[in-house]
Length: 114
Length: 324
Image (tube, rainbow over all chains, first blue to last red):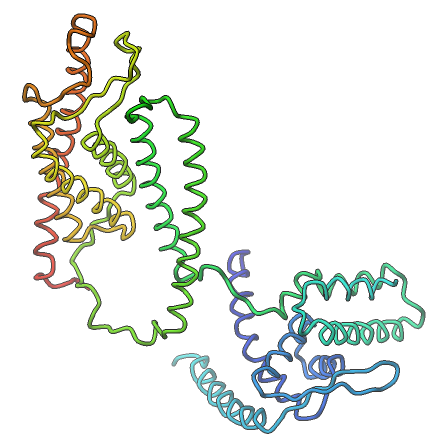
């Protein structure tokens, strides 16, 4: 891949990931998580999301009424926990269906033409 | 104060007041968790360089804070091309007017006597023009957003497709505006030349004779039409039937009137009696003025003639099918 093609590939890959990260975040937040533990959980699942993206996205999803958050006093420091709320659960169920449909479509399209 | 506290304080300075403490606390907590994890994996306390590396990876405080702020731009990308064209067109029109007033002067302020003032005025007018056009587009953009402009558009109101779009040259548009304004200024108030040209004290007025004032209105309208056509072309970048009509009509009428003014004796008059000027000099000045008016007239007639085939092409373009 030459330099220019690699650049285009990076851009498309970034766009592809952008939407997927929101779905992954919502899915991971079916259990309450604080920022660092959430990031670790995503990395373990194979999705490395940098902190500069993760925290503002959590705020945005909370602003959209999909997440609930609260500060919890704990050792060695207080942490802000995020959790999917009822609205978020409904949206996640829909997104899950959309994702599977999209996955099937892409698999069909990506199969080599006979 | 340690490096982490300094970093969080720097980010907080760029955050909106209502989320400053909350976001600041979360950034502190998350970074402290990252540093703890790194310390644990290293099995020793972190050095300042290692802490700095973690902070650098997180990003410059401005970048980090920006991700939490709502993004609002003065001019949206969809309107930016139109914005720059409006700005450029308005600037050309203002500069053309200023150039006309500087080149031709006015009573009590002869030609080229106020170049410094004119440049100073142009600077301030250009700045306020920039501010007003930007403000207008800011509100226009908000109106488009609030009024659901992009949802309510009607495909049936799209302009007709033409077999070929004729591009309008920006340079020709600029020339038409500037020269049109020069001629409009001369037709309106004449030219006021420094008296020293003819070795007299008072500035010397040179204008279309009062007995020819009947031609003023058609000339005004013709010049207005060709300036409007040029301005519209600068905005649209393509000729339309209306701009070709305005351009052709404006140049044809202005060209004919100016041709008559250039050739007919007594069509130009000066504010100086012939006896007051050195012999022959007043006549030479009038001949020069006639020659310049003649050049304007010939240019306009040439442009009108060359626009005629373009009008023909645009007039019948809609009746022919568009090739795909």
